[in-house]
Image (tube, rainbow over all chains, first blue to last red; front, side):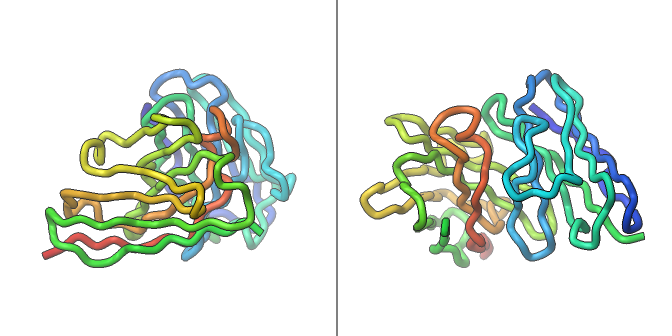
Length: 106
Length: 123
């Protein structure tokens, strides 16, 4: 199952609403998770089951979608949110990740 | 505190072998599925292999099937990745990652990651 993220990068300002999309090559129900990775750091689980916030993750992050189309939204971008975001499907092996979306400061 | 510590990376020639280890602490190792995920320099993430908590519960990416073997020693709280017939394209940082639980879908969602060990395949 291939995952296509868009955009591959974006520039945004503090306080902006940011939306990242992830499209699966076939239906995966809600079997999708989102990770955040900052430079030099390991990935951090943000959202699982497409829309459930992992414990400790700020509520400005949200996820939605099912089937083939998914979104990650940051409602008000904060300085610590500049990072690369990855989606991952867990519906079938091999597990696959999207190519990543790099969020940069405008 | 949950911790995962990888070791065993290094420089190896094409066709060579390496065994990676991931030693954990802070949770009951035998209750969780574990995976290896790799990342090439400046690039994205690639899942490599998953080992569940039951016998025969192993899965591999097509790119490593037949060359890599995942295993665990619950008595030592350690996960392994035996990598044989290494290729230049296997060069990456290898992370071990904990599944959120024992069963699907939790086992396939990674909630804790080690800091990685670098494998370089080059002559």
